[in-house]
Structures are given as structure tokens and as C-alpha cells.
Image (cartoon, rainbow, N blue to C red):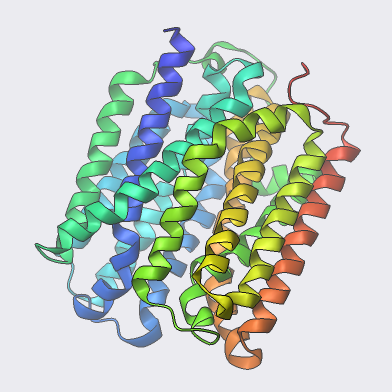
Length: 396
């Protein structure tokens, strides 16, 4: 096994462990907030908003620090902070400390995903990037399958045990990174002229990056309406249990695990703009099928599989575009800027979806989500095609 293959295996393992940790917590955060932390009603949703705020605000700085201090060093510090912050929640019983630790966790987490993506770009040959980012997606979705099961086992002890388990998993991720990630990467060896940094400055000066962040943010908002608010919205249309709803996410994750590698072969044969457009169309069609949810569970399965296919195409394609576009001494900064797309979805999506459903009903939400997804694919495709970023299998 080559050095790059060993490094990629380590990064995929770290992404999988981190995903197990976050997925173990996610289904139980609201219940824990109500039952243990004393946060009643909609106040529990504040934890997600605060975490997203921490990621967005710190992301403006974290990318620059990683590029200047070293991806590996910042990645390990990020994991240490996440482990301590999420693990500490096992001992929290009141609202203010709960909010504070979610904010701190968001600050540290803001550096994790951009640093992982930048390390992939540093350590993996250019012609293997799309496959490498696809492997990260597979690892993340394996975590989404295993994590909730691990969290459910932890709840047999107590709800607080979920956070203890998550903290331990992140500590394991830290150990893997410390042992397996090379201390020296390609980015550390190359000397290039210093380029003015800062996420906001980068977005301001790079119109392509700004357009991709805007398109990805819209896509994330429309997907979050399904991911976070889906159960409430679907219950306006049909009877659906919590278990059945959770099962749809498992189906989506399994779909990505099974078909991500075949999807990378499809991506390699198409123009990148076409790939992003197809991804937007697939998510739009999947969301549109939710209009027919009263027709039975089979329709919901098809809908989530289509959305999963859109994710398989969009995520590794967009990450590879950003990786290839970024100057070598600003790779983490560019990935940090692009990671704002998920933060935008997490910060805006859950609240707006519920409000729209309350004012206009679930049907209009799904229609609007489909239109936004399609528009996102069109914006991304036009942006990339204008840059003549054509086929991934060709060299730059």
C-alpha cells in the first residue's frame, strides 16, 4: 500500500469515527435537552442554532490558522476540543452550560471538516481526488448507520451516556489522527507567495467560490427541510412513526455506501457542470415525490434514494472543484469557506421549514424545496461551465 493510500485510509477512518460520534448524539439531543438540561419547548432547537453559529463564526478564522499552522496540528486540536466539549455534556444539567458547550463544540468543529478535505488534497494525487472525496462520503454514511445504533445502546444506561460515548469516539479519532497522519504534507513543503487570507476576503475576491457557496447553501436549506423538519411535515400528509422516519435515513445512508464508488465512475465521464445540474435535479425530484407521501412508504423510499443519489454526485464533485481551485497555501481556507454551505442549512433550514409549514402547509414547503434545489443545480452548473472546468479525468 502506498503512502497516499495509507493516508487516505486513515482520513476515511477518522471521518467514519467522527460521523459515528455525531450520529450517536443527533437523535437524542432534543430529548436530552428537555429531560436533562431543562430546556422546554422550542428552546431545545437553540442548541443546533448555537452550534451552527460557532461553526460559522470560527470558520472565518479556522481555515487561515490551518493553512498557516499546519492542517494536521489544527485537525488534532479540533478533535481534542470536540471530544472535551461534547463529552462534558454528559455532566450538564442546566440550560446555560448546555448552550455554552454546544457553542464551544461548534467552534472546534469548524476546523475539522475543512482540515480533512485539505489533507485529502495535499496527500492524494490529483487524478484520484474525486474517488478520494467519494470515499470520505462513504465513511460518513457508514457512521450514520452505526452511530444511531450505538447511541440507542448508550441510552440503555442514560441519555447522558450518549455524550460520554461520543466524547470517547472523538478521542479515538484523535488517536488515529495522531498516529496515522503524516507530520509533513505536500502543502507544508511548497513555498508559494503569500496570498491575502480570510474567509470573507476569499469569498469577496473569488466569484466562483461565492457562487458555489450560495448554490450549496440553498441546496442545504432545502435538504434540511426534509432532514430536520420532515417528520412534522409528513405527518400533515400521512401517518408516519418515528421508527419509520428514522428508517428512511438508514436507507439513504446504505444507498450512498453501496453506490458511491459506481457514481464516481459516472462523474469522471461527464462535464462537471452537468454533474452538478443532475445532482440538483435528482434532489428536486426526490423532494417533489414527498408531495405524494400519502401514497405509501414505498414512495418515501424512492424519494430518499433519489436525494441520496443527488448527494453522491454533488458532494464529491463540488469538493473536488474547490480543492483544485484553491491555491496550495489556502486549501483549508477554501474548504472552510465551502463548508459554510452546511452551516447555512443548519442555521436557516429547521426554523424556516417549520414556519412555512405552519403558515402555508407542508405541500408548499415541498414545492418550494424542489424549486430551490433545481435552481441550486442550475446556478452551480452555469458557474462551473463558465470556468471551463470540464471533465475530472483530464489533467489541469
